[in-house]
Image (cartoon, rainbow, N blue to C red; front, top):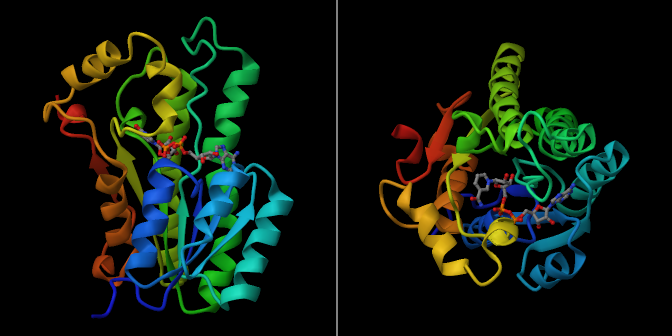
Length: 254
Ligand SMILES: NC(=O)c1ccc[n+]([C@@H]2O[C@H](COP(=O)([O-])OP(=O)(O)OC[C@H]3O[C@@H](n4cnc5c(N)ncnc54)[C@H](O)[C@@H]3O)[C@@H](O)[C@H]2O)c1
């Protein structure tokens, strides 16, 4: 049977953990070759055991590294069809209410979540257009469409990702590049991202506290998001660009 992304080449940032890792596994299962990038070398390297993948150490805030990651993708696999900008941080280990957020925290969150996405798109577009087009999927958050009084930098960064994704979509369409760009807005997905909040003796209570606010009354799983990324990465979504897909168990509909 032919896979849904058979013969395509993908680059997934933040591919060593959580949603990124599930996306890597799903894209490979559906026939893609995947460049996994992350700052977590041990987890990323371990994924290289999956046939059709390579791991590259990469800090998405570093412009020089973006250039070399893209160029290594072309050297290894010959093209780039799919870019999934998944690397992200919450910055929630430090206060993020408007009065107490430090400029350092604000800049760190913006740098990874927004500048990382900007750089990824900037350097992927030229190689995608050269090889006949592609699909860019930027992982935002439901926090980008609701007020987040205790995660102000995170919410603002993710709202920025959505807006930027629409601009990329329209720019590429206007230029006739055949490159689509969409954003995904996950809700509460159980991944290591939540550990700072969940770890400790009150883990179960905190887990339940999160579920209380979700209409479907369950945590999301990384695959719930990976399935949507797979759809946007594949040609099944050839008429979809500038869109936002919310995967949050109904939380932002309340
Ligand atoms: N888990 C959720 O509930 C949830 C909800 C909404 C949005 N998201 C978004 O989904 C994306 C993935 O999150 P996750 O839950 O899988 O988290 P995760 O912590 O499991 O994975 C994030 C990965 O990004 C990597 N990373 C962090 N900073 C990086 C940098 N500067 N350069 C390269 N890699 C870096 C980490 O090493 C890690 O492997 C993030 O953008 C996050 O904001 C997650």
